[in-house]
Image 1 (cartoon, rainbow, N blue to C red):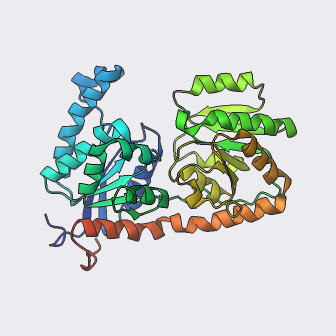
Image 2: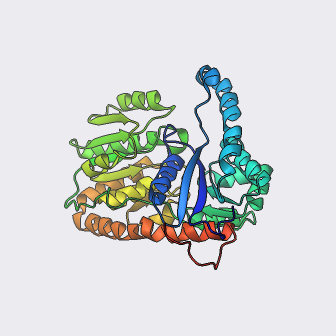
Image 3: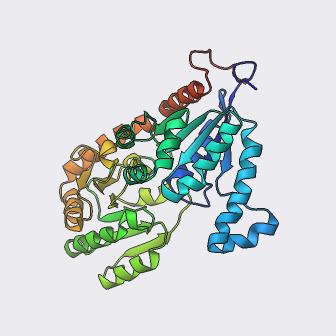
Length: 372
């Protein structure tokens, strides 16, 4: 059905992982799904890239390569069934093999069904991915609209001649309630997953230097991943005390850890627009981060927090200690950081998504749908 003729709401399929795959894409997709709920102009539904296979295939999910086959055998028919009934297909995308297994099938099926596609690329690995993959470049050039959450990705795509629109990630600033901390206490938090690109080992090494100066310092690590055992081993080798490995935490509950902390420390080597930094801003934590990827686009050094070079644990430790030692500086940074969060409120991001959906669906310039 053409949404311009009688339909009251644009029907949008969000192609994304469920929260069983706890990461930035899943969290943002879930946030969007909840934000659109009961909206008078958009009716959104999730089409998971990791659907639960039918019973005959479920045992295959426990086997590494068979899992991919079982998921694909379930995912493609699901796309065909679900995309028939929508007006716009909003595809969340990461890089490398994930791009081939999730976004590419969605684009192929949407094209066969003559549905417009909005590609929403999130990965900080974009520079290398687009350089290596002619398939990725071709697909991104052929979708109806490309949306990215940061100026960093906008610049990367432009370097390959691909036009994008920047629509930022959203943050529930009411859930992550701001609290002034004057002075900051040495209660440090990290919420990055335990994978190589996030370089949590650098965070541990920085904490060692902080704890040498502040023996009462604590470090809470929220997350999980393939490097968990090695990171726990490194914490032991470094002789760290007061370190907690919490494990994965549901998005609805993670605000509690920001509320308990005073300083947010992250040391990735590759990044895009980390929602974790925005959550720390909204909560009132002082932030120290590496200048990876799109981080400088949301955190200006000396205005909203402190930036250091990638893999420089000494500089990261020195920056944490500076926040602890200079209460006036830390208070100025955290208040300025909180002010930037207004642009990430749903009320401000919603019109941007609505505009790109309507443009993709050919509705630009038409009156708003009648509220239901």
